[in-house]
Amino acid sequence: MNSVATSLSAVNAPSKGAIWTGRVITTLVVLFLAFDGITKVIKDPHVLSAMADLVFPVSTIVAIGTVLLVCTLLYAIPQTSVLGAILLTAHLGGAVAVQVRVGHPLFESSFPIIFGVLVWLGVYLREPRLRALVPLRTQSN
Image (cartoon, rainbow, N blue to C red):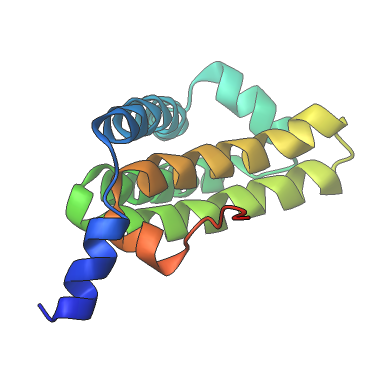
């Protein structure tokens, strides 16, 4: 690694508190999304009802759940967490579009956005390379 890359990683190195906060957020996100994906794959009656409300055919539910589980697995593995976050962002963007399309209230439409922020916050807090790519700037006098 060259000296510039070494300097960047040292400057952007997360604190222990940030790393643990990122791990906790990531764990909560993974648990929620795994639960969501599993309930789709097993065709839980509540999911069938919700998907009918969203005008999704029953034949698509297992595929949607499987895609969600694969994306969540990629997100849970540290070496592929950024790729997983990108794929989950796409999935959650589709969820926003569906919620808006059927005319659900603001909270239901914005919940996937909030969740997407948590997906990225979990990675950002524990990944120095992402901090180097997307630095948060502080005001200096």
